[in-house]
Each structure stands twice: as C-alpha cells, then as structure tokens.
Amino acid sequence: MAGAVKVGSRPPWVGLAAAVWVQVAAGTAYTFPLYSHALKKAMGYNQQQLTMLGVANDTGENFGLVAGVICNRLPPWFVLLVGAACCFLGFGTLWSAVSLTVTGLPYWLLWIAICIGTNSSAWFGTGVLVTNMRNFPLSRGTVAGILKGYVGLSAAVYTGLYTGVLHSSSTKLLVFLTLGLPIVSLAMMYFVRPCMPSLEEDSLEQCHFMFTQISSIVLGLYLLAYTILVDFLPLTDSVIYILFGIMIIFLLAPLAIPIKMTIFPTKRKNNVASDTGSTSNQLTEEGSEKKEPLLATSSSNNLGNAQENDDASDVDMLLAEGEGAVKKKRRPKRGDDFEFHEALVKADFWLLFLAYFLGVGSGVTVLNNLAQIGVSYGLDDTTILLCLFSFCNFVGRISAGAVSEHFVRSRMLPRPIWMACTQVVMVVAYLLYASAINGTLYASTAMLGFCYGVQFSVMVPTVSELFGLKQFGLFYNFMLLGNPLGAFFFSGLLAGYVYDTEAAKQDPTSSTCLGPNCFRLTFLFLAGVCGLGTLLSIILSVRIRPVYQMLYASGSFRLPQNSLH
Image 1 (cartoon, helix red, strand yellow):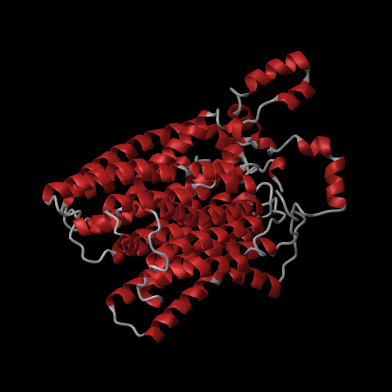
Image 2 (cartoon, rainbow, N blue to C red):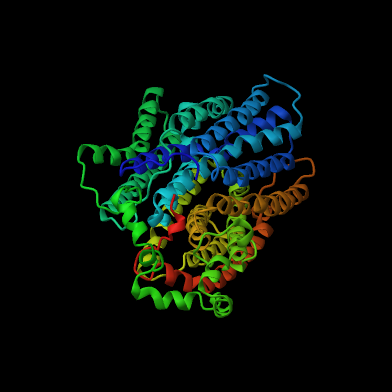
C-alpha cells in the first residue's frame, strides 16, 4: 500500500471519523430521485430515457475497478482527490443542463456526466473502506457495517438537506454536489491514511466501535424524525437550520473517540504492528518459530480439515521436491492473499458474486422505481417511502456487520448465511408487493430496505476473509458490479418494459401507470431471483464453513502476516 504508514493508537480512529464524512458524501447515487424529475422536465425526456439514466447512475456508482487498482499503488488522498474531481465534472454538467445555463446538451453526454458524477462514490468508498479495513483487520465485519451503514444513511441526509435547507430545489442540490462534496473530500483526505494495525483483541477497541454504532443509530432515528417533521409541519428556516445543525453534531460524534484518547490516554500494550526496535528484531530472530504457526495450537486440526482438498497436490510435491520447493510453488488457499487472476478461477468467488448480484440487483430495481411504485399504489407523496427504505437500509447494513461479526467469533458461522436468510425475507417482501394487500406497502418496503442493506455489509468482509486484503480494493469493486448489472437487466429492461406496457394498456397517450399491475410481473420475477440467490448463498456457506472454522477457531480472527501494511 502506497504512502507512509502512521504510527500510534489515535490515528486509526481519526481516520474512521473522517471516513464517516466521506462515506456520507459517497451516497451521491441516492440523490438521483431528487433531481431526476427536474432533469426530465428540462430536457423533455420520456420515462424510458429517464430509466436508462438511472442505469447510468448505478453504473457510475459501482464501477470502481480502476479505483481498486489505484488504491494499491497510490495513497488514499489521491483516491479521494479523483473522487472530488468526478463530483465537480459530472454534477457540474448536470447542473448546467437542469439550470438551462447550457442548452441543447445531447443525451449521451448527460448519460456520461451521471456516470462520472456518481463514480465519485466508487473512489470515495474504495479509498476509505480499503484503508480502514486494513487499519482494523481484526474487526472487519464491524468496520464494514459502520462505513457501509453511513452510506445508507446518506440518502436520508441528502433528502433532509434537499427538502429542508435547499427548499426542494434541484438546481441548488446539484450546486452542492458540484462544490460542496469536493470541499468535504479535500478537508478529510489528510486524515484518511494507512496506520499500523493492532494485532490482538482489545476490549477498549470494541467499546469504541459500540459507541460509533450507537451514535449512528441515534443519527438514523433523528434523520427519520427530521424528514417527517419537515415533510408534515410548516417549519421556519431558523428551526430547519437548527435541526440540520444538530444532525451535523451527530455526524461529528465518532470524533469523540480520538478526543477522549487524547484527554484520557491509556497505556499501550506491546501488540501493535508498528512497534519497532527490539520488537521487530525479536520477530526476526524468532522467525522460524514465529512464522509458521499462524494459528493457535488448538486450531491446528481445524486448519488441516479446512485445507484437506487443497493440500493434496502439496503433499505430492512435498514428497517429490522437498518442503522448501513446495512453499515457493504452492497456490494460495482460501484465507490467504489472492491475486485477482487467482481468485477468478475459484468457484467460491463466483458463487459470492452471483448471490450478491441476485440480492442487490433485485433490491436496486425497487429502489430505482420506488417513487413510481408509490404513485402506482396511490401515494401522492413518496418522500416518507424513500426515507423509510433509506433508514431500514442503514439498519440492515450496520446490524449485519455487528451480528455477523458476533456469530463468526462465537459459532464460526459463515457470513453468507445471513445473505441467504435475508433473501428469503426479500422473497416474502416481493410477494407482498405483488399481492397489493392494503397496508403492506410500507411494511414490505421496510423489509426490503433492511435486507438490501444486509447484502452489502456481508459481502465486504466475506471477500476480505476468503481472498485477503492485498487486492481487497479490486475484489470489492468487482463485486459491486452486481449492482449496475442488476439495474440494467432487472430495472432497465424488465421493470421499465412491464411498466410501459401496462401504461399503454391503460392509456396509449400517457406514460403514467396506475394500479398493482404496473409492477406485479416484475415483483414475481424478482421473488424467483431471490429464491435462486438464497440457494446459492446456502451452497456457498456450506462450502466455506471449514474456512471459517480455520480462521476463527481461537475465537478471534487469524491475521496472516502478509496481510499487514
């Protein structure tokens, strides 16, 4: 990893606090429903053209392969700088179109502008997630849940900003995205830096994570109440600004941890990878004894069972060539650091990708069409529906990180099992949508939002545990391609076609569809998709159970030495 490594116990927490702000900024794709109607009106687009712009929105947000490669070669500040530039160029172009500052912009140019603008999310997310996963390698699920949770919350943050402070002005929102987000990125990029990780469990560290999780949950509840108040009550500008200021204070809450560590310092244990001098010399001198046993003695049997099939060829090579030759030639096993081409030939890699693709691809279809779904079911104002999905999405992300972390440590339960469980719930939610039973719209939206969030927070640490942290940025961004692929196939092709067909049946001169038939066929198809995703998640969980028994046999994560900075 490029860049100087920061030593000390406080810098990782300062970086995590800064990452919170960057992750909120990374939720730009959630703003599409807030300005898409203005873009449609200004440019005279039809619903199908607008739907394909939604595909561009998801494509830009999740195409991060370049960012994944760059983050291994250049420091995080450069990755965040590129994200800031994407915001300025992409959303600046959209602002010029919506405000009619520049007229006659071609459709393809705006499609690319949306891709560039939302691609900032990939750069922001990769920069902070990869850095913090490496700074806290023993708490990967918790860190992933917190950071992905704040991305989920960003939808409510932007909605509150749009409806309150910006008075529902799409042009003002685009100005903020063009200028405000680059300022946030430039202000935070100094603090997001690689730090030497702790190599032992620390109860105080878990308390700090608990504080961050609780503060984020309080922020989520506050944002939900704030959105409802602004939507239903005629508040004055001064009251709105005060309420928004309180939200800013909640976003600053994680900064309390490094401040507390400064005011009330504690003695550092000799368990940090940054220790130099005698510690590093001692590790060097004891190389042969300390290098080999990466697991506790009690876990050696589990390691043997976990790698039984993979070790077969190694045993043959050992007998033929000797132990030294085998060590140089052996292929990485699940849990080691993989190169990208080595992971591509693994069945587990594609099982995880397909399970994730089916889960988030179906979920993003509903998210992209949620406003139209609400209107088709008779809602006049879909703001609360969007806010409910956002809040439950956040709860799913942060709870999945914490819950999966608990069960891998206590039961060695593979994380993808939670993908399977929540995709079963998603099947139920889609069937409720299709049935159009009175009073189930909000319940099914809440269920879907929660389960959609779980998919993200489970995928992130699973990738790092199976294929290592060395190329984590690249693996993570490859998995994210499941989102735009799902948006294209399930939303752009299926949902858009079904909606337009039903609208034409109702009124050939109108592009608006009303009634449950507008999306019924889509929901039934998505239920089948998630049923298949459940099956794949179960198969993956069974296959990688021995890996988790090996990694967490001692009750905490076994960190390979080649995964350090």
